[in-house]
Image 1 (cartoon, rainbow, N blue to C red):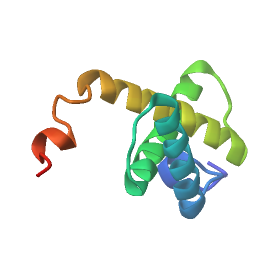
Image 2: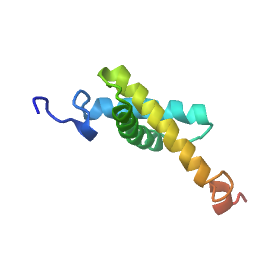
Image 3: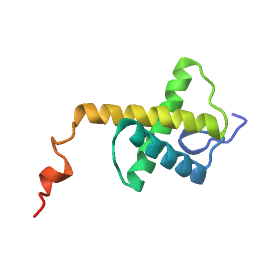
Length: 103
C-alpha cells in the first residue's frame, strides 16, 4: 500500500470533495429519477452512491481516477440507490402526505 487510504476507500478524494461530489451526484440522480429530496439526503445518497459506483467499477474492471471519474461513479451509484428505493417504497405508500395530511 503505497497510497494513503481515503474516505470510503477512495485514495484520491478527501472528505470535503467527497461531500461536494456526493451532493451534486445525489441532486442530479434525483432529477434523473424524478425523486425529490433535501440537501442532506442528496449528500447521503451521493456518498453512498459513490461507494456503490466505485465497487461496481472495480467488479467490471473499470479504473476510477480523478474527481470526474468519482463523480460519474457516484452518479451511477446514486441512480441505482434511488431506483431500488423507489421499487421497494413506491410514492404514496408511506409518503409524507399520507403521514401528515394537510389541514
